[in-house]
Image 1: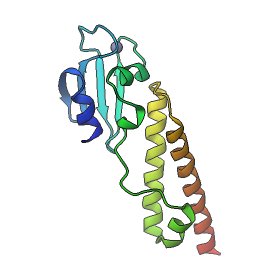
Image 2 (image 1 turned 60 degrees about the vertical axis):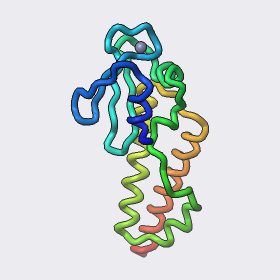
Image 3 (image 1 turned 180 degrees about the vertical axis):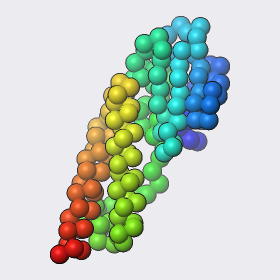
Image 4 (image 1 turned 60 degrees about the horizontal axis):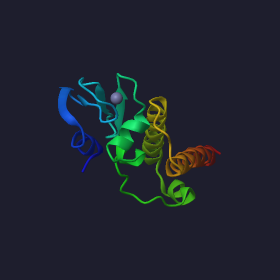
Length: 144
Ligand SMILES: [Zn+2]
C-alpha cells in the first residue's frame, strides 16, 4: 500500500481536490471542516497540514501511524556507500545524487510541518549526506 492510500484510508471524508491534493476531516481534533490537507509529493511521500492548527505529529499519531509511514518504502537495502560509489557510472551517480537530495527535501518539508524525525530518519539522512560526499570524492578521482 502506498503512503497516500494508507493515509486516505484512515481519515473521514477524504476528497481529491487536485491531482496529488486531498482534503478530509482531521483525526486529531473534533473536525467539522474538512480542515486536513493531504498532499502527495512526486516521490510518493505524504505531507499533512491541519488548518485548525494541529501539529503533523498529532495527526499522524491520531491515525495510528508513524512518520515512516508517510514515506514510500525504499526497496533497495542500504549497502555501504563506498561500494555503491565504486560501481557507479557518471549518469548513475547523478541519479543517486538526485534521489538523496529528494529524500533530504522530503524530510525537511515534513520537519517544516512539525513532523518529528525519528532516529531511523536521522540515520537515513546521515547516510544520504555520506553518499553525497562519496559521490563528490568519486568525481574528484575521475577528474584527477
Ligand atoms: Zn486538526
